[in-house]
Length: 365
Image 1: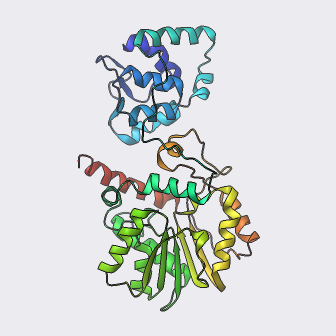
Image 2: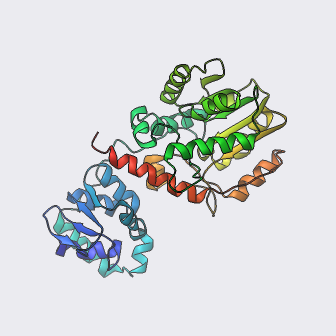
Image 3: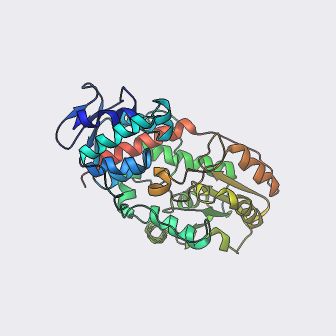
């Protein structure tokens, strides 16, 4: 099978694939010393990649169990560049003759046929993008997988955002506490201060602000499972008099003013079309001279995520990343005075690696 499909693999991954490829008949292609092996378990995987060239087709095959990976996951990330779809094909100069050769190879492998059904895990959202109803569905798709899964990946801190490593050997829990301290200090929290934590997750930030800074915190999330577990954690910690957890959209909060607002790892779900509305709503919820800390992932180029990307279809449906300058301009347009901008890029890389360690350690649970 490797001989038959070599033209196709070369077309999509280049002449020197970054990983070894093993096919369903046991034949292989690529360097023996590769740090990772891509396992193609079925011709259906090849068919998926033909119908959706690039990362989306490969992701569908992986989710469906038709494609797997052995070895170093970081080495395998080189596949993202190798599976660049039409761009990759343009680089290798595929013409009509080459496409005919590919079709013959695909036919010989059993890959020719109707497009396979989409895996049930793929997001299929309906309604107007970034409406309350569609946002609720998008959040449920990602965050309501199970609290047990997120505890396994995130560890005891149950914090799903970039940590802050004061030293390289800090534990994930120490780094997350450091991040929450950084947030509380930037917000200038004092005993009795009213804090609104937008997208509170499992309540860790709100609890930290109450326990260590004496704040009166309200945490809001539109995830049913997050809200339920967050409320349980607050009660177990004896913080029910200081922390309130609500299942509520930020657009429905009407009990301002607050002394401070934290939004950590949430505004990626807002969307460029609603960025001004989001910032305006938070501004109106603050008292005069109140503070907002908005912590999120940014990107160097135009806002958005490709709707055909793996992350949009399977991880963060409707998620959008914005350029820092775009967010600053939008905040200023809503009357915020931007006093501080800090990049934690290196810290996020460390955070992600710790999550991968946790995930691999619990893979067979």
